[in-house]
Image 1 (cartoon, helix red, strand yellow):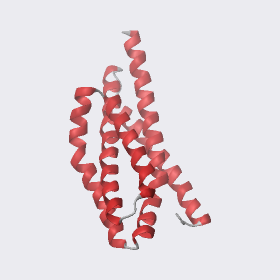
Image 2: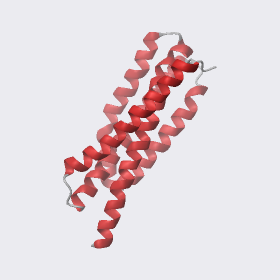
Image 3: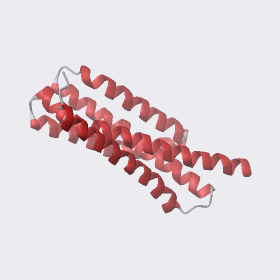
Image 4: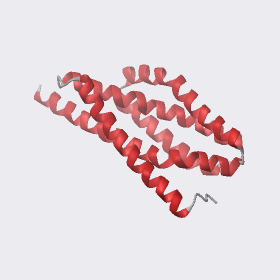
Length: 168
């Protein structure tokens, strides 16, 4: 029982750390993404369309990712989401057509949904096993994620203000 408890504590710490790093990464690229889409497409309409594609894909795929994480485990779904997100962000600068950016933002939303569902589920699993308050454990993980996002978004925005947003 002590070993299971130790594994759950480690799981809780790992999940909270993933949330911190995940949201810190989002805080870096999300402020830049609309500027990048506008620079590539020259259209504010496509900026909105790309953001909408990401949000709709995220909302539409969250339940499926959650169900899959119940079947295959939280870690596998989180890793798939993080790997997919990394790939999308690596490929995005190679897009040559505006609709490619919209499609990539949709795939980004699907990848983000995997992390949004599996990591909180892992936190919940650990909280139950450790007999912690579910709300306390979840709020700790979300607090770390929010702190990571806020810090990196501030730094990313400062970079834009200091050096501009030239992507060429």
